[in-house]
Amino acid sequence: MKETCHTKLTWYGDLSKGQKRASDKMIKAIKNKYDLLIWAVCGAGKTEVLFHGIEFALHQGMNVCIATPRTDVVLELEPRLKKAFKGLNIAVLYGGSPQRFQIAPLVIATTHQLLRYKNAFDLLIIDEVDAFPYSIDERLHFAVIKAMRKKGVTVYLSATPSKKMRKDVSRGQLKATKIPQRFHQKPLPIPSFQWIGQWKKKLKKNRLPAKVLTWMQKHITKKRRILLFVPSISIMKKVTKILRERRLNVEGVSADDQDRKQKVQHFRDDAYDVLVTTTILERGVTIPNVQVGVLGAESTIFTESALVQISGRAGRHPDFFNGDVYFFHFGLTRSMKQAKKHIVNMNDSAEKECGLN
Image (cartoon, rainbow, N blue to C red; front, side, top):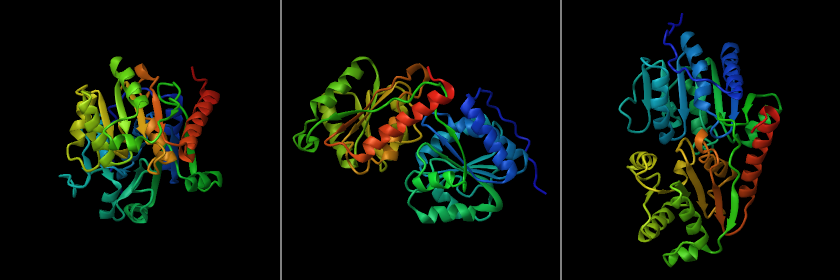
């Protein structure tokens, strides 16, 4: 007999209609022991959707794990879950974390940490199921299966589910619920395309395209912060250096940066106007009143999924829902067009379903 956990939810916020529907379907999936995909736009409030389902599972004596591919997202989730379930023992596991071998009713972990577990969880929530490395690493898919108990339930979260997952849904092999609008019920910002010529040649001459600088200066003048995504670490360093030489208040961040957590926090705290980043910040980061640019949007690293997620960094706050998103490019790609189409389709679905303002 499983020991019941009596922890109460200490989050008292309201769910939107779409969130409430998804929350109810999650509880139903847990009760009836089937897997579920929650397909929700960036900024839909996926974390809040999970709260009542997690509470229900804990009250049934279930061991719960939220797994996500990236450490940054684990670190974002930790304070939110600890606030929502005050007093609950929560283990937070990632490479180098002090709690790596801790057992707890609720675990927040990177998907790599699941390799340590066998028959451990009754409810396994996989956040950002389409994200690297989980999306391409078969070992991590095996780790999920191994970490689950025999009659366990898997809940998948994604703004951009894979083609295979979408096919499974259309064939009735996977149940799904969709949240096509953000919690503040305003439409997703639609990206604009801006051709900037051979921008790499300009970089070699320590210059940035004038259209990029003009766009940035416009927002800085209005005291709006800018997230500028670039295709690689070397380009991030080069762009940061050029902007500093132009006396802009700027910082750069990437996956190999030990101080990235502090830099993102400083950016949140208005310590600088521009944060130049690789795709490391495409997910799980919420910054009010941020404008988003992508330099070299034609680069292969900027897939449809990545561009949808990057666009989703803008307009998340209810007071600043009109975020600006620009793809600066040297040639339109299929990924860019598909990302824009994806966002437009979600806005259309939301308008039909909920009557967006």
